[in-house]
Image (cartoon, rainbow, N blue to C red; front, side):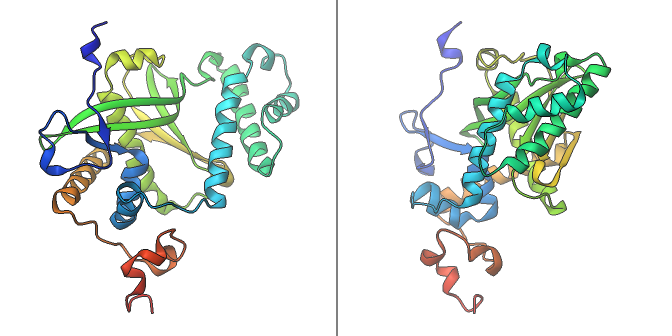
Length: 284
């Protein structure tokens, strides 16, 4: 393997638009999380990623980390041969046993029942080889050009499954499902599609992925609502992600990260006390 094929420039959130052509300077880093936070509120993005102000660790954040780790480990230790010998109830118990005992047992039980049913379905369809994900917490890096500017993309895809000769990335969410989340979820998955399709082949192979296999669908799973959805990829969602990246670049260029103020949601923001918008008449 030629080393220069996968060589990438240094990348950072502390990025200067005026030095983007200097190969000795870092390029702009954009992750799924930073992209989403800019979409939510550019000012919060500035506080978090540029000013590096500390952010409160909420119960929802802790829950997300713990449950994500539990689900990753579930797929690491699941034994297909053992599972094939179990009845439905035994399989549910087995799946439950692969999760930790903590404050989130209810959500683990929901996931265990879901996976037990999914395994039995795959067994009936003689496709147990596709039960386990091809990729489990896959870290990818890529560089793309956005309006002539090199941007470094980075992200961890929760799971990638194989079906009908194509890859399907699946995102786990530990909150409750609401229909208004659809647009945001599509952008998250479109970000992953762009990341996957621009990751150097050598990196994909190192992660156990086949570069020539297309990504035709994406999906998300909200176990707290027992909700799952898989759909064909949406080109307009990919376009929206590119447009969002352009807005991030433009914010750096102009040095302006405007506030999106909503009283109900901003009240719980870690940066509420340092945000000028929180002290405007709109709050009163």
